[in-house]
Length: 623
Image: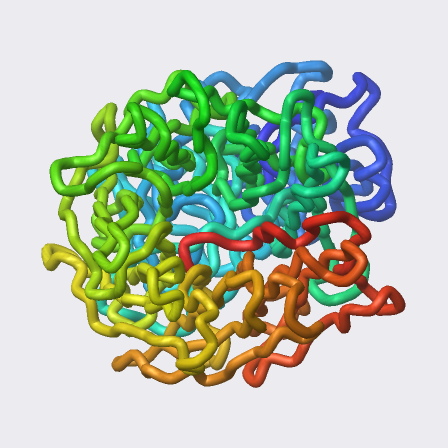
């Protein structure tokens, strides 16, 4: 007997002697993936379900019993032994094509409790049903499914409960489910409803269990080949952590120099990751995509992202970003190379596909007039800042000493070359050699994701951060300029900016700002969102291990590692004593350290690897 779909969205073929006797659900899990089969009230393993419509994939007459299993009136389950049916096996209703979930993109945060879901209907269906679950296998359904008629492409739905959920779609014909479910998608839903519904943030959940994972690079170890560490937990708290490491692939130098979430480039429902190997002499930098799976990152088959330019030196992959720029439901990548085109610079746009990443890139951006040299020295996906259903991006060129950087905002679109230049602006901050670009999420509560531009590399070395608000038809506007609270520090304030999500529980996203001056004691400053952006930090976290550890050179946030319902902050310090790098994890406000940086800690984030913590990844675009 073959079954397809059901609450697990999988296809399972059993031996001809099935259905098998059972006493508990676990008896069925011995012969099929967890969640595929359930022990029915008649004592036999049958397709798992949560409602009658799950069983209608197999037969419109089937029902979901009290044990969560499909029952038919016939002894063989209404299916011929060894049959290869997908939908209605009676032949009255042929199977349809599974719809495609488009928005929200995978592994993001909504800006409003009322979420806009957009779908592409499957062929031979007349409606799409959106199903909501508490887990990837949909063994724990939540809420009421929503049916989207074929004449519509989206629906706005108030979500209950909030927090981390999963959603998927199935095709209907005359209220009968006639397709297998799509791959489930993870979504984080806030507690407050806003006037506008948009999305931002890219969480790292490489094994699809709904728990955020921690990634840290050690680019200076292993004779500068580099290494990537993956920390995962299945408990939603601070116990049960597992660690894996990946050596740099052949030819890579400084692997793990940049680590960033890639969303879900192939649409399988697992979080993917971008890892860059910048190379020590910039002769052969490499960029890889590591795909997620049920067991975490697929470390054995890294996907190499094709470099677009030739010659050296090159800065290909020194700055990367991600988002669903063309709105097809798959995450896309942007990779900067400010040395390309005789140092005019360019940014390559790579589209996600069911098999990974399309190559060569269908779009290569070059700087418009007024951008200057080294276009693409920094890039960032910033979420959907205008709430039009397409993610957007920022690309910067460095400003002259004492001048101001140039930043281009690109809006996403459904065209073959999805990124469209919207506006060129120069933040009213000091000049900088390497502008910092960051998505913050919705810091002012209007439903639009917001952005920040830092000038931590300014000639003065004091540094500044300009905050811009997203909006619909209104171009982003600068509403605040933040300065280093310690005016004597010269600590390159603004060299690192990260969105934190909502760390104080007031419904507004917050963010952190750090520096990266190698010879000055460093601090990380936490700023709170609100109707008005506060100009002073709510908390300043001083370098715990003393100066010289490069504390704050890499940060990530916007995810809840300890399972207390409040987002945490990761801060890398790769130059620890005796070459021991550290990733500090802080929680709540005030933010004490979750893990003391000692080898005897229950879960140590110290690694005896050169440069460990030089890059950290848990979330991008601001959360």
